Image (tube, rainbow, N blue to C red; front, side, top):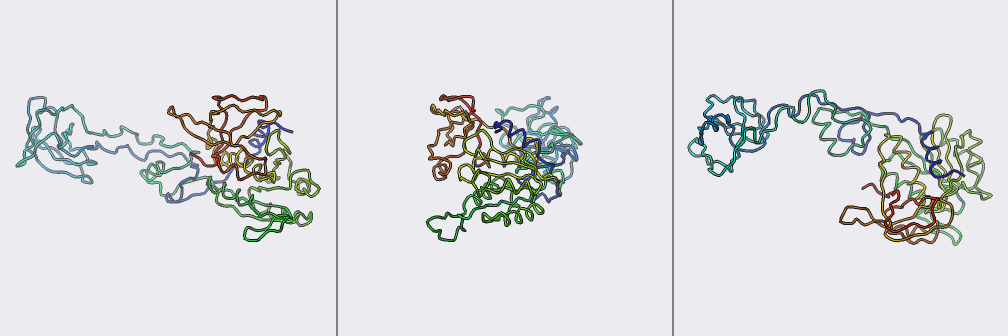
Length: 402
């Protein structure tokens, strides 16, 4: 069996490159940028007024003037005006171009304008250059604004639309198939017999993938028949980028998946990890670089293995830095005596210092998926330790990104 760290490394070494696709800016939220974005002009592209008020030449104030004749009113969206007399002023609006010949803006609150004359409030403080956003103060033409491999959010859309990027190159979403196996499974809408259960794991996987931005997902189911499984897997592997199997990878007499994957020339990278839950996990790749994840069939094992390995791998495929490490502190002591990495479901709170606090959730084994609904994720406790103390920090994996 591999350690968790070794399993991580093995998966990372076998993540294939993902293709790119060009989408309109309306459709890129949550996608991963695959091209650097540079400024198409200076930002701001002109000396921009940041307060409604009057624009003037500071020299006139410095020479003792405290009232100015208003030459003109300008607004945002107009071409630049020019101050004709350096002892006068212009009314200006937020977002407009600073008139030529002006270098200072005094807000309306500090002046009284009457009969085309602006009188300064004696208490007002005036500094040269105030209330002006200087040209190129933020970015210069050609300067890098966004590096590639960032997950695009609303702030990024503001950037790309401001530089005229109507079409954006992003990482292509992989086609994912989630396959459940087992004679004991029936559809959600069916009433199961006493010896049957509803097919829930596969829908949990689909929901989790969707929650993390992976929408090209379809589901399949096959009974524990060797020939049928072979034919189904052969067909799926021709038409998918990632295959996620729920169940069928343990040591039972009807767990045919590992054997059939070998027959289909899927290279086994590993089978079994020193962890609880989820020890029987399987991972391999096809000769065409398609990833195959065999998740254990118990609900909690499926969920935790999915969040610990599959979703991070899919995100890393989209971009190398999409999944930053998160940590949380234990709120109470916890012990686990086996030499296995332990995935401990936790509920989360946040203290006044902004530290994430993790409280263990008691479960009744890897088949208990009801208890973990109280959790927001899980922490990873290393195999090298038995007793874990309150206040210690451990890696955190969340059901949903913060």
